Image (tube, rainbow, N blue to C red; front, side):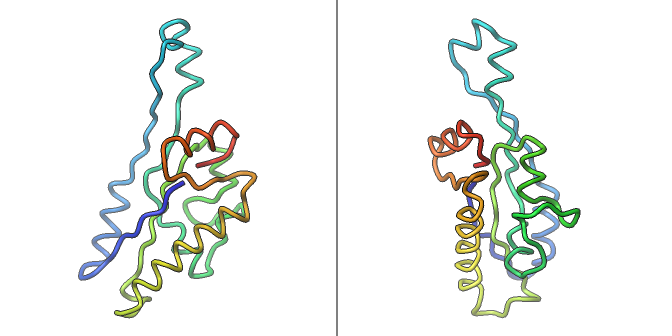
Length: 146
């Protein structure tokens, strides 16, 4: 699981629309000799499902949703990610120009990074922060969402 900071200035709503429109899901696989030996089994065992963008931390930081708890509210939470077979999630810290005052953006971004670390710590049995490919592989191998 990674965290990025996305600033919004003029046209903040346009940035949010663009982020939603560009949300991508990536199914990837590692290559290796085992793929050739038993192609079907190997490919299935080496696929990763990674959501490359979510603003879910924003609602969590604002106290409107606890992403560590199952909920019908919002796009995602850790239990539903696990149920859906998601291996990795990239969290963005998005600051709303209507809710965050100029001069507070940097503090809000740090608050987002702290919230990311807090939820990962609270749910360490099911999620792990991954900032490198090796950390991603280790988290997935241990059955956790990276």
